[in-house]
Length: 327
Image (tube, rainbow, N blue to C red):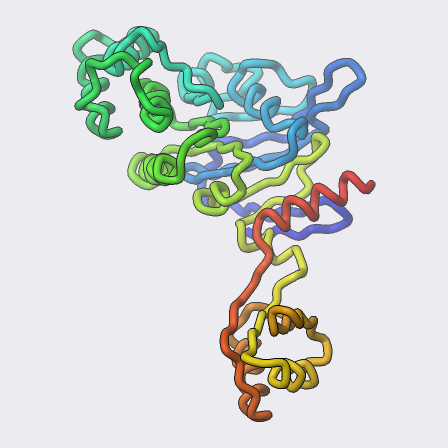
């Protein structure tokens, strides 16, 4: 798969390597004269994590609501888990799970009771519901608190229970909206491990929306950036980072004389005199690194330390959405 940014749009060759869990063509939605989605196309392979990023109001929640059958699209067509949104919405509902930004846990019920309630809503036989609840309590390390009311749970435990409740019906596609909002770093990493396990072990497809760009970087096989209702970029995290200039090597020196000597060798560099450092623009490749070190050695210039800086998803987000704002 390749993605190319051209004049603010993306051309994506998705290929046909694996079946699509979610596909959409020309999805559009407006409220009055406000266009929320302006004809977006998606193809998300089975058993992958897809992250949809964008500023507030970009249309992320609307996209999830349409694909999970909560609201209809004004135009376009989509299939989820092999079911057409327009002609087989019940099939879509039976194949997906939705975990919202705020945990849909009943505080008055225990963890086990919350899971059994979901089993009843899924019309599972009582024995199968209890088996499924016990299985999920064990999988999410909630067995010891199974009989405790959810109101006593920490934020991380509530999010785990919320995700477990989503899995009672064994969905093939899960929509995760801000799954780690408000969690501490340890709880966030626990959630990431659970999400990866779902994809790797169960071949579940995860559609993720998040404001934490490092979360998308860690989890997503592919990332799309939505702004003003349009998809403006799509690709792997590394493909998106390569769209943005700004990579450089940063050298730090022991004294000003060494800094001066290095600056004379690399005329396109930028000095940081107070830090006795030099920033040399270029790719963060082994060949570029070797060239810089060989140049320093050849001139008998000694650097105290070297760090490699590459654009991250924050840079991608700010640069590409900034183009839309300026336009």
